[in-house]
Amino acid sequence: MKMKRSPSIKKSVTLGFALLMLPAAVSPRTLLAQLAPSIPISIADREKALNTLFDEIWQDQLKHQPEFASSIGDKRYDDQLTDYSVAAYDAQLARGRSYIEKLSLIDPSGLPDQTQLSLDLMLRQLIDEQEESRFKTWEIPVNQMDGIHADLPRLVRQISFDKAEDYDRYVSRLNKVPVAFQQITEDMSAGIDDNRTMPKYLMEKVLVQVNAIANQKPEETTFAAPLKKFPAGISAEEQKRIQTDVLDAISKQVIPTYARFAKYLTAVYIPKGRTEIGVSSLPDGDAYYAFCIRQRTTTKMTAGQIHQIGIDQVKQDETEMLAIAQKLGYKDIPSLRAAMNANPKLHPTSGEELLSAYRGYIDGMKPKLPALFGRLPKAPLTVEAVPAFLEKDSAFAYYEPGTPDGKRPGTVFISTYKYESRLLSGAETTAYHEGLPGHHLQVSVAQELSGLPEFRKYINYTAYVEGWGLYAERLGKDVGLYTDPYSDFGRLEADMHRAIRLVVDTGIHSEHWTREQVVDYFHAHSGLDEATVQSETDRYVAMPGQALGYKIGQLKLLELRSRAQQTLGAKFDIKAFHDQVIDSGALPLDVLETRVDAWIAQQKAGK
Image (tube, rainbow, N blue to C red; front, top):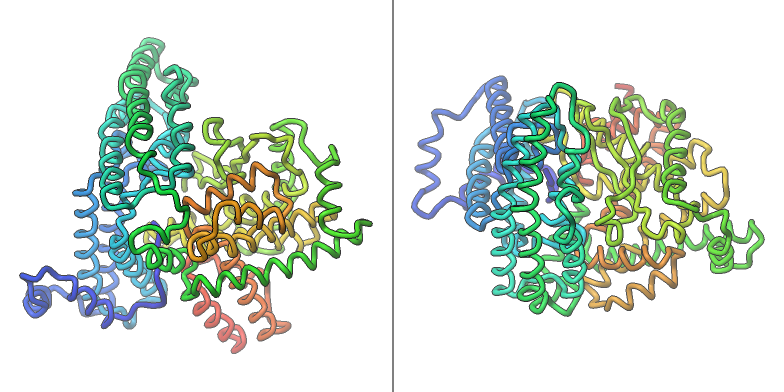
Protein backbone atom coordinates (compact mmCIF):
# COMPACT_ATOMS: atom_id res chain seq x y z
CA MET A 1 0.00 0.00 0.00
CA LYS A 2 1.33 3.36 -0.98
CA MET A 3 0.41 6.26 1.22
CA LYS A 4 1.10 9.86 0.53
CA ARG A 5 -0.11 13.25 1.64
CA SER A 6 0.62 15.49 4.62
CA PRO A 7 0.56 15.60 8.44
CA SER A 8 -1.72 14.07 11.03
CA ILE A 9 -5.35 14.27 9.93
CA LYS A 10 -7.76 15.53 12.55
CA LYS A 11 -11.21 14.07 12.98
CA SER A 12 -13.00 17.29 12.19
CA VAL A 13 -11.09 17.75 8.94
CA THR A 14 -11.58 14.22 7.71
CA LEU A 15 -15.22 14.16 8.72
CA GLY A 16 -15.83 17.34 6.80
CA PHE A 17 -14.00 15.92 3.79
CA ALA A 18 -16.04 12.73 4.00
CA LEU A 19 -19.32 14.59 4.14
CA LEU A 20 -18.36 16.77 1.19
CA MET A 21 -17.77 13.62 -0.83
CA LEU A 22 -21.21 12.18 -0.21
CA PRO A 23 -23.57 11.60 -3.14
CA ALA A 24 -25.83 14.61 -3.68
CA ALA A 25 -28.91 12.56 -2.80
CA VAL A 26 -27.62 11.85 0.72
CA SER A 27 -27.51 14.76 3.16
CA PRO A 28 -24.84 14.88 5.90
CA ARG A 29 -27.58 15.23 8.51
CA THR A 30 -29.28 12.07 7.23
CA LEU A 31 -26.02 10.15 7.22
CA LEU A 32 -25.13 11.16 10.77
CA ALA A 33 -28.65 10.35 11.96
CA GLN A 34 -28.39 6.91 10.44
CA LEU A 35 -24.91 6.17 11.75
CA ALA A 36 -24.95 7.90 15.15
CA PRO A 37 -26.41 4.96 17.10
CA SER A 38 -23.61 2.73 15.83
CA ILE A 39 -20.71 5.13 16.46
CA PRO A 40 -18.53 3.54 19.18
CA ILE A 41 -17.98 5.68 22.27
CA SER A 42 -15.63 3.96 24.72
CA ILE A 43 -11.91 3.71 24.02
CA ALA A 44 -12.10 -0.08 23.85
CA ASP A 45 -15.04 -0.02 21.45
CA ARG A 46 -13.43 2.61 19.25
CA GLU A 47 -10.16 0.70 19.07
CA LYS A 48 -12.00 -2.49 18.23
CA ALA A 49 -14.05 -0.73 15.57
CA LEU A 50 -10.94 0.74 13.99
CA ASN A 51 -9.09 -2.56 13.93
CA THR A 52 -12.12 -4.17 12.33
CA LEU A 53 -12.16 -1.47 9.65
CA PHE A 54 -8.40 -1.76 9.08
CA ASP A 55 -8.81 -5.48 8.48
CA GLU A 56 -11.80 -4.94 6.20
CA ILE A 57 -9.81 -2.48 4.09
CA TRP A 58 -6.81 -4.81 4.05
CA GLN A 59 -8.90 -7.76 2.94
CA ASP A 60 -10.47 -5.54 0.27
CA GLN A 61 -7.00 -4.74 -1.07
CA LEU A 62 -5.94 -8.39 -1.17
CA LYS A 63 -9.14 -9.40 -2.95
CA HIS A 64 -8.92 -6.68 -5.58
CA GLN A 65 -5.13 -6.85 -6.01
CA PRO A 66 -4.60 -10.62 -6.17
CA GLU A 67 -1.07 -10.34 -7.58
CA PHE A 68 -0.04 -8.37 -4.48
CA ALA A 69 -1.69 -10.99 -2.27
CA SER A 70 0.29 -13.72 -4.02
CA SER A 71 3.53 -11.76 -3.68
CA ILE A 72 3.23 -11.72 0.13
CA GLY A 73 2.38 -15.41 0.36
CA ASP A 74 -1.44 -15.20 0.58
CA LYS A 75 -2.53 -18.00 -1.76
CA ARG A 76 -6.29 -17.39 -1.67
CA TYR A 77 -6.28 -15.47 -4.94
CA ASP A 78 -3.52 -17.29 -6.84
CA ASP A 79 -6.01 -18.10 -9.62
CA GLN A 80 -7.00 -14.44 -10.12
CA LEU A 81 -5.72 -11.32 -11.85
CA THR A 82 -6.59 -7.71 -11.09
CA ASP A 83 -9.58 -6.21 -12.87
CA TYR A 84 -8.01 -3.28 -14.73
CA SER A 85 -11.24 -1.97 -16.25
CA VAL A 86 -12.41 1.62 -15.74
CA ALA A 87 -15.49 0.26 -14.00
CA ALA A 88 -13.23 -1.49 -11.49
CA TYR A 89 -11.29 1.72 -10.84
CA ASP A 90 -14.54 3.59 -10.29
CA ALA A 91 -15.71 0.91 -7.87
CA GLN A 92 -12.42 1.13 -5.99
CA LEU A 93 -12.80 4.87 -5.58
CA ALA A 94 -16.37 4.42 -4.36
CA ARG A 95 -15.23 1.88 -1.77
CA GLY A 96 -12.51 4.31 -0.73
CA ARG A 97 -15.03 7.09 -0.13
CA SER A 98 -17.12 4.74 1.95
CA TYR A 99 -14.12 3.81 4.08
CA ILE A 100 -13.25 7.49 4.57
CA GLU A 101 -16.77 8.11 5.87
CA LYS A 102 -16.62 5.18 8.29
CA LEU A 103 -13.15 6.02 9.61
CA SER A 104 -13.97 9.70 10.01
CA LEU A 105 -16.82 8.94 12.40
CA ILE A 106 -14.49 7.37 14.97
CA ASP A 107 -12.98 9.79 17.49
CA PRO A 108 -9.24 9.01 17.87
CA SER A 109 -8.75 10.90 21.16
CA GLY A 110 -7.45 8.70 23.96
CA LEU A 111 -6.62 5.78 21.70
CA PRO A 112 -3.16 4.13 21.86
CA ASP A 113 -0.45 5.97 19.95
CA GLN A 114 -0.01 3.32 17.26
CA THR A 115 -3.76 3.05 16.72
CA GLN A 116 -4.03 6.80 16.17
CA LEU A 117 -1.07 6.61 13.80
CA SER A 118 -2.72 3.79 11.86
CA LEU A 119 -5.90 5.86 11.53
CA ASP A 120 -3.99 8.89 10.27
CA LEU A 121 -2.04 6.82 7.75
CA MET A 122 -5.06 4.97 6.43
CA LEU A 123 -7.05 8.18 5.98
CA ARG A 124 -4.06 9.75 4.35
CA GLN A 125 -3.86 6.97 1.80
CA LEU A 126 -7.56 6.88 1.02
CA ILE A 127 -7.84 10.64 0.58
CA ASP A 128 -4.72 10.65 -1.57
CA GLU A 129 -6.21 8.00 -3.84
CA GLN A 130 -9.24 10.22 -4.39
CA GLU A 131 -7.00 13.14 -5.28
CA GLU A 132 -4.85 11.07 -7.63
CA SER A 133 -7.93 9.98 -9.59
CA ARG A 134 -8.14 13.49 -11.00
CA PHE A 135 -5.09 12.71 -13.14
CA LYS A 136 -6.42 9.41 -14.55
CA THR A 137 -3.13 7.61 -13.99
CA TRP A 138 -4.78 4.32 -15.05
CA GLU A 139 -4.68 5.65 -18.61
CA ILE A 140 -0.85 5.42 -18.64
CA PRO A 141 -0.32 2.01 -16.98
CA VAL A 142 2.69 0.76 -18.94
CA ASN A 143 6.28 1.91 -19.36
CA GLN A 144 9.69 0.29 -19.75
CA MET A 145 10.08 -0.02 -15.97
CA ASP A 146 6.66 -1.30 -14.93
CA GLY A 147 3.42 -2.59 -16.34
CA ILE A 148 1.49 -5.78 -16.78
CA HIS A 149 3.90 -7.08 -19.44
CA ALA A 150 6.76 -7.04 -16.91
CA ASP A 151 4.87 -7.53 -13.66
CA LEU A 152 3.38 -10.90 -14.62
CA PRO A 153 6.74 -12.56 -15.37
CA ARG A 154 8.18 -11.08 -12.17
CA LEU A 155 5.24 -12.48 -10.22
CA VAL A 156 6.07 -16.05 -11.27
CA ARG A 157 9.16 -16.25 -9.08
CA GLN A 158 7.24 -14.80 -6.13
CA ILE A 159 4.73 -17.65 -6.00
CA SER A 160 5.43 -20.86 -4.10
CA PHE A 161 4.48 -24.19 -5.67
CA ASP A 162 4.09 -26.78 -2.93
CA LYS A 163 1.36 -29.04 -4.29
CA ALA A 164 -0.64 -29.81 -7.41
CA GLU A 165 -3.38 -27.35 -6.49
CA ASP A 166 -0.85 -24.51 -6.68
CA TYR A 167 -0.17 -25.38 -10.31
CA ASP A 168 -3.88 -25.66 -11.06
CA ARG A 169 -4.49 -22.18 -9.67
CA TYR A 170 -1.54 -20.94 -11.69
CA VAL A 171 -3.06 -22.33 -14.89
CA SER A 172 -6.33 -20.57 -14.10
CA ARG A 173 -4.42 -17.30 -13.65
CA LEU A 174 -2.56 -17.77 -16.95
CA ASN A 175 -5.87 -18.32 -18.73
CA LYS A 176 -7.02 -14.90 -17.50
CA VAL A 177 -4.04 -13.08 -19.05
CA PRO A 178 -5.88 -12.17 -22.30
CA VAL A 179 -8.69 -10.39 -20.44
CA ALA A 180 -6.26 -8.43 -18.25
CA PHE A 181 -4.25 -7.28 -21.26
CA GLN A 182 -7.44 -6.31 -23.08
CA GLN A 183 -8.47 -4.14 -20.13
CA ILE A 184 -5.05 -2.50 -20.06
CA THR A 185 -5.29 -1.90 -23.80
CA GLU A 186 -8.69 -0.23 -23.38
CA ASP A 187 -7.27 1.99 -20.63
CA MET A 188 -4.40 3.02 -22.89
CA SER A 189 -6.80 3.75 -25.76
CA ALA A 190 -8.82 5.97 -23.44
CA GLY A 191 -5.55 7.72 -22.67
CA ILE A 192 -5.04 8.37 -26.36
CA ASP A 193 -8.48 9.99 -26.49
CA ASP A 194 -7.66 12.11 -23.42
CA ASN A 195 -4.17 13.05 -24.67
CA ARG A 196 -2.59 11.11 -21.82
CA THR A 197 0.10 8.93 -23.34
CA MET A 198 3.65 7.85 -22.58
CA PRO A 199 6.53 9.19 -24.66
CA LYS A 200 6.79 7.41 -27.99
CA TYR A 201 10.43 6.40 -27.62
CA LEU A 202 9.80 4.73 -24.22
CA MET A 203 6.99 2.65 -25.64
CA GLU A 204 9.33 1.50 -28.39
CA LYS A 205 11.43 0.03 -25.57
CA VAL A 206 8.32 -1.64 -24.15
CA LEU A 207 7.69 -3.15 -27.58
CA VAL A 208 11.12 -4.79 -27.50
CA GLN A 209 10.37 -6.24 -24.04
CA VAL A 210 6.97 -7.54 -25.15
CA ASN A 211 8.36 -9.12 -28.32
CA ALA A 212 11.09 -10.83 -26.30
CA ILE A 213 8.37 -12.90 -24.64
CA ALA A 214 6.04 -13.13 -27.65
CA ASN A 215 8.81 -14.71 -29.73
CA GLN A 216 9.89 -17.30 -27.19
CA LYS A 217 8.95 -20.95 -27.14
CA PRO A 218 6.48 -21.71 -24.33
CA GLU A 219 8.95 -23.85 -22.39
CA GLU A 220 11.60 -21.10 -22.58
CA THR A 221 9.50 -18.32 -21.08
CA THR A 222 9.66 -17.24 -17.48
CA PHE A 223 6.07 -18.47 -17.18
CA ALA A 224 7.33 -22.05 -17.53
CA ALA A 225 9.87 -21.71 -14.71
CA PRO A 226 7.67 -23.55 -12.14
CA LEU A 227 7.97 -26.69 -14.30
CA LYS A 228 11.73 -26.92 -13.86
CA LYS A 229 11.48 -28.45 -10.42
CA PHE A 230 8.45 -30.12 -8.90
CA PRO A 231 8.01 -30.46 -5.13
CA ALA A 232 8.14 -33.89 -3.56
CA GLY A 233 4.80 -35.62 -3.34
CA ILE A 234 3.59 -34.93 -6.86
CA SER A 235 3.57 -38.15 -8.84
CA ALA A 236 5.18 -38.50 -12.25
CA GLU A 237 1.77 -38.87 -13.85
CA GLU A 238 0.51 -35.71 -12.16
CA GLN A 239 3.66 -33.85 -13.19
CA LYS A 240 3.03 -34.78 -16.81
CA ARG A 241 -0.56 -33.48 -16.60
CA ILE A 242 0.56 -30.25 -14.96
CA GLN A 243 3.28 -29.71 -17.54
CA THR A 244 0.77 -30.16 -20.35
CA ASP A 245 -1.72 -27.76 -18.74
CA VAL A 246 0.85 -25.05 -18.03
CA LEU A 247 2.50 -25.17 -21.44
CA ASP A 248 -0.92 -25.27 -23.10
CA ALA A 249 -1.96 -22.10 -21.25
CA ILE A 250 1.30 -20.38 -22.15
CA SER A 251 1.13 -21.34 -25.82
CA LYS A 252 -2.59 -20.63 -26.33
CA GLN A 253 -3.20 -17.74 -23.96
CA VAL A 254 -0.04 -15.97 -22.82
CA ILE A 255 2.18 -15.85 -25.90
CA PRO A 256 -0.65 -14.91 -28.30
CA THR A 257 -1.67 -12.16 -25.88
CA TYR A 258 1.85 -10.72 -25.84
CA ALA A 259 1.89 -10.91 -29.66
CA ARG A 260 -1.44 -9.04 -29.87
CA PHE A 261 -0.19 -6.42 -27.43
CA ALA A 262 2.92 -5.94 -29.56
CA LYS A 263 0.71 -5.34 -32.62
CA TYR A 264 -1.40 -2.85 -30.66
CA LEU A 265 1.69 -0.95 -29.58
CA THR A 266 3.04 -0.91 -33.12
CA ALA A 267 -0.13 0.00 -34.99
CA VAL A 268 -2.08 2.10 -32.50
CA TYR A 269 -0.28 3.31 -29.41
CA ILE A 270 3.29 4.17 -30.38
CA PRO A 271 2.23 6.41 -33.28
CA LYS A 272 0.11 8.37 -30.77
CA GLY A 273 2.82 8.55 -28.13
CA ARG A 274 3.80 12.02 -27.02
CA THR A 275 7.01 13.59 -28.27
CA GLU A 276 7.67 15.82 -25.22
CA ILE A 277 9.23 13.87 -22.37
CA GLY A 278 7.99 15.90 -19.39
CA VAL A 279 4.59 15.36 -17.77
CA SER A 280 4.04 19.09 -18.05
CA SER A 281 2.89 18.29 -21.60
CA LEU A 282 -0.05 16.24 -20.23
CA PRO A 283 -3.44 17.75 -19.37
CA ASP A 284 -3.05 19.24 -15.86
CA GLY A 285 0.60 18.24 -16.17
CA ASP A 286 1.99 20.88 -13.80
CA ALA A 287 -0.58 20.00 -11.16
CA TYR A 288 0.15 16.32 -11.67
CA TYR A 289 3.88 16.84 -11.14
CA ALA A 290 3.21 18.87 -7.99
CA PHE A 291 1.09 15.95 -6.78
CA CYS A 292 3.92 13.52 -7.64
CA ILE A 293 6.35 15.62 -5.61
CA ARG A 294 4.06 15.59 -2.58
CA GLN A 295 3.42 11.90 -3.02
CA ARG A 296 7.06 10.89 -3.43
CA THR A 297 8.70 13.26 -0.92
CA THR A 298 5.85 13.67 1.62
CA THR A 299 6.90 17.32 1.86
CA LYS A 300 5.48 20.65 0.69
CA MET A 301 8.57 21.49 -1.35
CA THR A 302 8.19 23.00 -4.78
CA ALA A 303 9.95 21.77 -7.88
CA GLY A 304 12.08 24.93 -7.85
CA GLN A 305 13.20 24.37 -4.27
CA ILE A 306 14.15 20.77 -4.96
CA HIS A 307 16.01 21.77 -8.13
CA GLN A 308 18.20 24.18 -6.13
CA ILE A 309 18.80 21.64 -3.34
CA GLY A 310 20.04 19.27 -6.01
CA ILE A 311 22.47 21.82 -7.43
CA ASP A 312 23.82 22.53 -3.92
CA GLN A 313 24.23 18.83 -3.13
CA VAL A 314 26.08 18.22 -6.39
CA LYS A 315 28.61 20.90 -5.42
CA GLN A 316 29.04 19.41 -1.94
CA ASP A 317 29.69 15.92 -3.26
CA GLU A 318 32.14 17.21 -5.84
CA THR A 319 34.16 18.89 -3.07
CA GLU A 320 34.50 15.60 -1.17
CA MET A 321 35.26 13.64 -4.33
CA LEU A 322 38.01 16.05 -5.30
CA ALA A 323 39.66 15.51 -1.93
CA ILE A 324 39.82 11.74 -2.54
CA ALA A 325 41.08 12.21 -6.09
CA GLN A 326 43.92 14.44 -4.91
CA LYS A 327 44.77 12.06 -2.09
CA LEU A 328 45.16 9.30 -4.68
CA GLY A 329 47.48 11.52 -6.72
CA TYR A 330 45.10 12.85 -9.38
CA LYS A 331 44.70 16.53 -10.15
CA ASP A 332 40.93 16.43 -10.55
CA ILE A 333 37.85 14.21 -10.53
CA PRO A 334 37.80 13.50 -14.29
CA SER A 335 41.39 12.26 -14.13
CA LEU A 336 40.54 9.79 -11.38
CA ARG A 337 37.43 8.63 -13.21
CA ALA A 338 39.40 8.08 -16.41
CA ALA A 339 42.01 6.07 -14.55
CA MET A 340 39.34 3.95 -12.87
CA ASN A 341 37.57 3.28 -16.15
CA ALA A 342 40.85 2.18 -17.71
CA ASN A 343 41.84 -0.05 -14.78
CA PRO A 344 40.81 -3.66 -15.57
CA LYS A 345 41.07 -4.59 -11.88
CA LEU A 346 38.11 -2.31 -11.15
CA HIS A 347 35.82 -4.03 -13.67
CA PRO A 348 34.21 -7.47 -13.33
CA THR A 349 35.27 -10.12 -15.80
CA SER A 350 31.90 -11.87 -15.60
CA GLY A 351 28.39 -11.36 -14.36
CA GLU A 352 29.03 -13.84 -11.58
CA GLU A 353 32.04 -11.86 -10.34
CA LEU A 354 29.81 -8.81 -10.14
CA LEU A 355 27.21 -10.71 -8.11
CA SER A 356 29.92 -12.17 -5.84
CA ALA A 357 31.17 -8.67 -5.01
CA TYR A 358 27.73 -7.72 -3.71
CA ARG A 359 27.42 -10.90 -1.69
CA GLY A 360 30.82 -10.28 -0.13
CA TYR A 361 29.99 -6.75 1.02
CA ILE A 362 26.66 -7.84 2.49
CA ASP A 363 28.39 -10.63 4.41
CA GLY A 364 30.95 -8.11 5.67
CA MET A 365 28.26 -5.78 6.97
CA LYS A 366 26.37 -8.43 8.97
CA PRO A 367 28.78 -8.46 11.99
CA LYS A 368 28.52 -4.66 12.23
CA LEU A 369 24.73 -4.52 12.54
CA PRO A 370 24.43 -5.18 16.32
CA ALA A 371 26.34 -1.96 16.96
CA LEU A 372 23.78 0.01 14.98
CA PHE A 373 20.44 -1.64 15.72
CA GLY A 374 18.63 -3.16 18.64
CA ARG A 375 16.13 -4.84 16.32
CA LEU A 376 17.43 -6.99 13.47
CA PRO A 377 15.44 -8.87 10.82
CA LYS A 378 15.05 -12.63 10.79
CA ALA A 379 14.37 -12.92 7.06
CA PRO A 380 17.12 -14.34 4.81
CA LEU A 381 18.64 -12.36 1.92
CA THR A 382 19.98 -13.44 -1.47
CA VAL A 383 21.63 -11.71 -4.44
CA GLU A 384 20.53 -12.62 -7.97
CA ALA A 385 20.83 -11.31 -11.53
CA VAL A 386 18.03 -9.23 -13.07
CA PRO A 387 15.96 -11.45 -15.44
CA ALA A 388 17.46 -11.35 -18.93
CA PHE A 389 14.40 -9.95 -20.70
CA LEU A 390 14.40 -6.89 -18.41
CA GLU A 391 18.10 -6.28 -17.83
CA LYS A 392 18.71 -3.81 -20.67
CA ASP A 393 16.17 -1.24 -19.45
CA SER A 394 16.07 -2.19 -15.78
CA ALA A 395 17.43 -0.12 -12.92
CA PHE A 396 20.97 -1.31 -12.26
CA ALA A 397 20.00 -2.70 -8.86
CA TYR A 398 16.78 -3.13 -6.92
CA TYR A 399 15.40 -4.99 -3.92
CA GLU A 400 12.43 -7.32 -3.90
CA PRO A 401 10.98 -8.13 -0.46
CA GLY A 402 10.52 -11.71 0.64
CA THR A 403 7.46 -13.18 2.30
CA PRO A 404 6.83 -12.61 6.02
CA ASP A 405 7.05 -16.36 6.69
CA GLY A 406 10.58 -16.50 5.27
CA LYS A 407 9.72 -19.08 2.60
CA ARG A 408 10.86 -16.66 -0.08
CA PRO A 409 13.92 -14.62 0.93
CA GLY A 410 14.38 -10.96 0.24
CA THR A 411 16.41 -10.55 -2.95
CA VAL A 412 18.82 -7.92 -4.21
CA PHE A 413 18.68 -7.97 -8.01
CA ILE A 414 21.74 -6.77 -9.93
CA SER A 415 21.77 -6.15 -13.67
CA THR A 416 24.65 -8.00 -15.30
CA TYR A 417 23.93 -6.34 -18.66
CA LYS A 418 27.27 -5.13 -20.09
CA TYR A 419 28.93 -6.15 -16.83
CA GLU A 420 32.35 -5.31 -18.27
CA SER A 421 31.38 -1.62 -18.32
CA ARG A 422 30.42 -1.62 -14.65
CA LEU A 423 32.82 -0.40 -11.97
CA LEU A 424 33.28 -2.64 -8.93
CA SER A 425 33.95 0.50 -6.89
CA GLY A 426 30.20 1.09 -6.70
CA ALA A 427 29.30 -2.38 -5.45
CA GLU A 428 29.91 -1.73 -1.76
CA THR A 429 27.60 1.26 -1.39
CA THR A 430 24.85 -0.37 -3.48
CA ALA A 431 25.08 -3.56 -1.41
CA TYR A 432 24.41 -1.55 1.74
CA HIS A 433 21.57 0.38 0.10
CA GLU A 434 19.65 -2.52 -1.39
CA GLY A 435 20.60 -5.16 1.16
CA LEU A 436 21.97 -4.52 4.65
CA PRO A 437 21.47 -2.21 6.48
CA GLY A 438 19.26 -0.76 3.76
CA HIS A 439 16.07 -2.02 2.18
CA HIS A 440 16.23 -5.60 3.37
CA LEU A 441 16.67 -4.61 7.00
CA GLN A 442 14.03 -1.87 7.00
CA VAL A 443 11.39 -3.74 4.99
CA SER A 444 11.91 -7.05 6.81
CA VAL A 445 11.68 -5.41 10.23
CA ALA A 446 8.43 -3.76 9.11
CA GLN A 447 7.01 -7.10 7.98
CA GLU A 448 7.97 -8.71 11.28
CA LEU A 449 6.37 -6.05 13.50
CA SER A 450 3.66 -7.38 15.79
CA GLY A 451 0.55 -5.69 17.14
CA LEU A 452 0.03 -3.49 14.07
CA PRO A 453 -2.62 -3.73 11.35
CA GLU A 454 -1.35 -5.71 8.37
CA PHE A 455 -1.43 -2.73 6.01
CA ARG A 456 1.21 -0.98 8.14
CA LYS A 457 3.73 -3.69 7.29
CA TYR A 458 3.59 -3.00 3.57
CA ILE A 459 3.47 0.79 3.33
CA ASN A 460 5.96 2.16 0.82
CA TYR A 461 6.60 5.88 1.16
CA THR A 462 9.35 6.55 -1.37
CA ALA A 463 11.07 9.28 0.63
CA TYR A 464 11.21 7.08 3.73
CA VAL A 465 12.11 3.77 2.09
CA GLU A 466 14.60 5.12 -0.46
CA GLY A 467 15.81 7.81 1.92
CA TRP A 468 16.62 5.02 4.37
CA GLY A 469 18.47 3.12 1.65
CA LEU A 470 20.65 6.13 0.86
CA TYR A 471 21.14 6.84 4.57
CA ALA A 472 22.21 3.21 4.99
CA GLU A 473 25.02 3.74 2.49
CA ARG A 474 26.59 6.25 4.89
CA LEU A 475 26.24 3.88 7.84
CA GLY A 476 29.00 1.75 6.32
CA LYS A 477 31.29 4.74 6.78
CA ASP A 478 30.16 5.11 10.39
CA VAL A 479 31.24 1.55 11.29
CA GLY A 480 34.65 1.71 9.61
CA LEU A 481 33.91 0.17 6.23
CA TYR A 482 34.81 1.65 2.81
CA THR A 483 38.46 0.96 3.67
CA ASP A 484 39.30 1.00 -0.04
CA PRO A 485 39.46 4.65 -1.21
CA TYR A 486 38.03 3.59 -4.57
CA SER A 487 34.96 2.20 -2.80
CA ASP A 488 34.68 5.40 -0.78
CA PHE A 489 34.82 7.32 -4.03
CA GLY A 490 32.12 4.96 -5.30
CA ARG A 491 30.01 5.88 -2.28
CA LEU A 492 30.26 9.54 -3.20
CA GLU A 493 29.52 8.73 -6.83
CA ALA A 494 26.32 7.05 -5.67
CA ASP A 495 25.44 10.02 -3.50
CA MET A 496 26.16 12.32 -6.43
CA HIS A 497 23.84 10.21 -8.57
CA ARG A 498 20.97 10.89 -6.14
CA ALA A 499 21.81 14.60 -5.96
CA ILE A 500 21.76 14.76 -9.76
CA ARG A 501 18.31 13.18 -9.69
CA LEU A 502 16.93 16.22 -7.89
CA VAL A 503 18.23 18.44 -10.67
CA VAL A 504 17.25 16.36 -13.69
CA ASP A 505 13.86 15.02 -12.53
CA THR A 506 12.67 18.56 -11.87
CA GLY A 507 14.50 19.62 -15.02
CA ILE A 508 12.50 17.17 -17.14
CA HIS A 509 9.09 17.68 -15.63
CA SER A 510 9.18 21.31 -14.51
CA GLU A 511 11.99 23.09 -16.36
CA HIS A 512 11.20 21.55 -19.79
CA TRP A 513 14.61 19.97 -20.23
CA THR A 514 15.26 17.78 -23.23
CA ARG A 515 16.57 14.25 -22.91
CA GLU A 516 19.92 15.44 -24.26
CA GLN A 517 20.18 18.03 -21.47
CA VAL A 518 19.70 15.31 -18.88
CA VAL A 519 22.36 13.07 -20.44
CA ASP A 520 24.77 16.01 -20.71
CA TYR A 521 24.24 16.93 -17.05
CA PHE A 522 25.02 13.35 -16.03
CA HIS A 523 28.21 13.34 -18.07
CA ALA A 524 29.28 16.70 -16.65
CA HIS A 525 28.84 15.69 -13.01
CA SER A 526 29.02 11.90 -12.71
CA GLY A 527 31.15 8.97 -13.72
CA LEU A 528 28.24 6.66 -14.42
CA ASP A 529 28.74 4.30 -17.32
CA GLU A 530 26.83 5.04 -20.51
CA ALA A 531 24.36 2.17 -20.08
CA THR A 532 23.34 3.45 -16.65
CA VAL A 533 23.10 7.07 -17.78
CA GLN A 534 20.75 6.07 -20.59
CA SER A 535 18.52 3.76 -18.52
CA GLU A 536 18.37 6.19 -15.59
CA THR A 537 17.40 9.09 -17.83
CA ASP A 538 14.55 7.04 -19.26
CA ARG A 539 13.50 6.00 -15.77
CA TYR A 540 12.98 9.60 -14.68
CA VAL A 541 10.96 10.30 -17.80
CA ALA A 542 8.73 7.29 -17.11
CA MET A 543 8.32 7.77 -13.34
CA PRO A 544 7.96 11.48 -12.54
CA GLY A 545 9.01 12.39 -9.01
CA GLN A 546 10.01 8.89 -7.92
CA ALA A 547 13.71 9.65 -7.99
CA LEU A 548 13.29 12.68 -5.72
CA GLY A 549 12.56 10.60 -2.64
CA TYR A 550 16.08 9.23 -2.22
CA LYS A 551 18.03 12.40 -1.47
CA ILE A 552 15.15 14.26 0.17
CA GLY A 553 14.59 11.32 2.52
CA GLN A 554 18.28 10.91 3.30
CA LEU A 555 18.68 14.60 4.09
CA LYS A 556 15.74 14.47 6.49
CA LEU A 557 17.14 11.40 8.29
CA LEU A 558 20.55 13.03 8.62
CA GLU A 559 18.88 16.20 9.90
CA LEU A 560 16.91 14.26 12.53
CA ARG A 561 19.97 12.31 13.64
CA SER A 562 22.04 15.49 13.96
CA ARG A 563 19.23 17.14 15.94
CA ALA A 564 19.06 14.19 18.32
CA GLN A 565 22.84 14.14 18.80
CA GLN A 566 23.04 17.86 19.48
CA THR A 567 20.08 17.85 21.86
CA LEU A 568 20.89 14.68 23.79
CA GLY A 569 24.67 14.84 23.84
CA ALA A 570 25.99 11.93 25.92
CA LYS A 571 22.47 10.51 26.18
CA PHE A 572 22.31 9.90 22.42
CA ASP A 573 22.19 6.19 21.54
CA ILE A 574 22.51 5.38 17.84
CA LYS A 575 20.82 2.00 18.28
CA ALA A 576 17.84 3.56 20.05
CA PHE A 577 17.61 6.26 17.39
CA HIS A 578 17.57 3.75 14.56
CA ASP A 579 15.01 1.58 16.29
CA GLN A 580 12.82 4.64 16.78
CA VAL A 581 13.07 5.42 13.08
CA ILE A 582 12.15 1.94 11.87
CA ASP A 583 9.95 0.53 14.64
CA SER A 584 6.71 1.80 13.10
CA GLY A 585 7.35 0.78 9.52
CA ALA A 586 7.55 3.31 6.69
CA LEU A 587 6.20 6.77 7.51
CA PRO A 588 5.72 10.11 5.74
CA LEU A 589 8.68 12.36 6.52
CA ASP A 590 6.53 14.92 8.33
CA VAL A 591 5.07 12.22 10.58
CA LEU A 592 8.52 10.74 11.17
CA GLU A 593 9.88 14.12 12.20
CA THR A 594 7.06 14.66 14.69
CA ARG A 595 7.64 11.24 16.24
CA VAL A 596 11.42 11.62 16.44
CA ASP A 597 11.07 15.05 18.04
CA ALA A 598 8.76 13.54 20.66
CA TRP A 599 11.29 10.75 21.27
CA ILE A 600 14.10 13.29 21.67
CA ALA A 601 12.03 15.19 24.24
CA GLN A 602 11.33 11.98 26.17
CA GLN A 603 15.00 10.99 26.15
CA LYS A 604 16.04 14.44 27.32
CA ALA A 605 13.52 14.26 30.17
CA GLY A 606 14.85 10.83 31.13
CA LYS A 607 11.56 9.04 30.47
